[in-house]
Amino acid sequence: MLFIFKQSKIILLKKFDDDDSRLVRFTDREKQVNPHFAINLINSIPPKVVKDRVVSCDGGGGALGHPKVYINLDQPGPQACGYCGLQFTLDHHH
Ligand SMILES: [Zn+2]
Image 1 (spheres, helix red, strand yellow):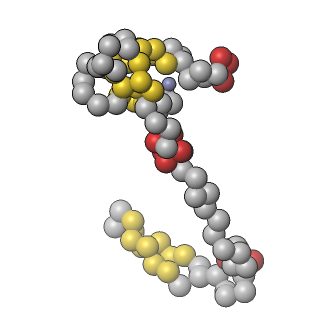
Image 2 (cartoon, rainbow, N blue to C red):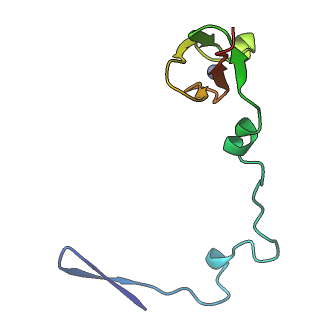
């Protein structure tokens, strides 16, 4: 038996028998996790070097992309698109 205290009431829950079908879980398989996390995949793409202080990104895929956003590159270092995570960096040597 399992007792739960909720708002000063005692609720009594029935404990399932060990062979009850409601306790069945995936016990015969290992838990499968996709190791290719999106954050790691997008970070593996090197930053795109551009010559403009402001660039736009639309995901590059037409209907598969995302709304066009403008990214300011005045801050030092690569700046990432808020939608897709592609990074852009300003080429200071021009
Ligand atoms: Zn983007």
